[in-house]
Length: 155
Image 1 (spheres, helix red, strand yellow):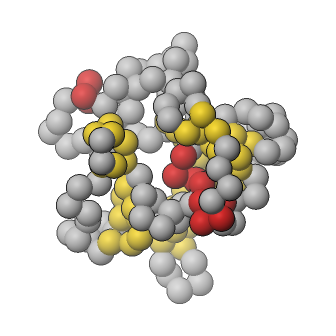
Image 2 (cartoon, helix red, strand yellow; image 1 turned 90 degrees about the horizontal axis):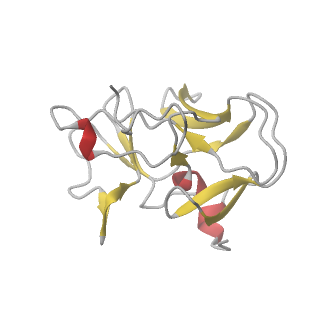
């Protein structure tokens, strides 16, 4: 578990601890009802075409916290992000990441529960990575779900 106040900012429903899927995971502190807003994905914002030169974390090439939005902007949770960046991928997620507009018309990512989540249960979203022309097999999934598609990429 971490006590870093920056990571835990605005994420009262999340506890960070080691995950059996990958690295640190985000776990529900208490039972959560369906459609509950867990948090907003935070981090440094990049304009279209100005993304980070190296989105992966040093020493961990398969780890990235960059979230692309439909308007071409990106949010890098590895730079000023909060605990939502530790929500791991699953092919059978219990949470959904959705774009929402704030009152100024700026896109944000909200994480909501898709179903009832038990206290202590790890939180997951389906990353559905757009890998362009790259081989989806290079983005191996570790979720262990019976319905695992074998990749974190959109197929």
